Every structure is written in C-alpha cells, then in structure tokens.
Length: 195
Image (cartoon, rainbow, N blue to C red):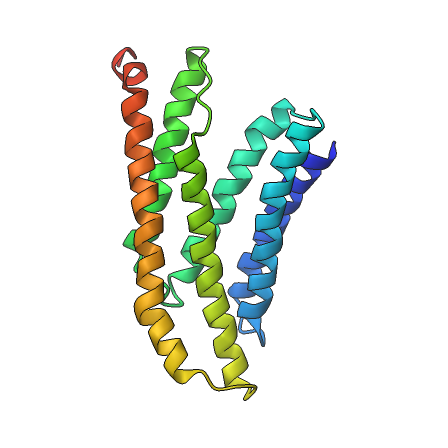
C-alpha cells in the first residue's frame, strides 16, 4: 500500500478516534477531538497532493479517498449537533448533498463516464472543514475556561451567536449551490437513464 493510501486509511482511523473521544466525558475531550480532526484534515490534503505529484493514483485511492472524506465530514457534523454547534437539519442537508452526488457519480460510472470534483465542490469542502474546526476550537476554549486558565465569557457568546451562523451560512450555501450546479451540468445522465 503506497503512502497516499496509507494516509487515507489513517484518516478513517483518526475519524474513528475522533468520534470515540467526543462521545466520552473525558477531560478536554473537545481539545483532543480538535487535534484529531486537524490531523485528519491535513491527511486529506496530503494524500491527494502526494498521489498527484508522485503519480501514485490507484483504484483503491479513487474509491477510498472520497469515501474517507465523506465519513470524516459526516462524523464531524453529527458529533457537533449535541454540542449545540448547529441544528440537526444543517448536517442532514449537507450529508444529503453528498449522497446525491455519490449516486450521480455511480450512475455516470455505469455509463463509463467519470465525473471529477469541480472547484466549487472543493471550496465547499474547505469551508465545511473551517466550520467544523471553528466549533471544535470554541468547545476547546470552553474547556480551558472551565479549567480556570482564562476567561472568555463575552468572546464565547459573540463567537457562537455571530461567527458560527456566518460560517454555517457560507458552508451551507456552497454545499447546496455546488450540488445543484453539479446536477444541472450532468442532468443528461439522469434523463438518459432508463428507469
């Protein structure tokens, strides 16, 4: 197994550890989860870059890399709902978009057509990662405040009340807009498919 594929597998393992940690009442669980998600996000960038630069693109990577990305993001969205980061409908909308695009790509693959990710979709992923990191950082800072390391009561309130909704809106808009655009550009694949 080459290095990019090892990083992909590592991302899945990191995601599992992230979910396990954030599901427990461990001291500084959010801080540990922030570190784990950060490492997983970095591995997401590195495996693609290394695979392209060193010509190490494999069938395993083509299948598992996007799958690992979706598992990582879906896990983060779901785990943040009980912590009050956003209402449940937000991750439902974002995850539904991923299922829709995955289904469209499967349909295209059955016709021998490869549908690559577009630039808007890549921006969507970046903003989703930023949004998750933002909320994990806020949860981590709350742990530091609870431990008496510092006080950030006013900053915390404004960060959740104003900063959070702005990031959610940007990520959600990019998610839905990129999904709709992707379907429109490939509508012929759907209409030409015999139901």
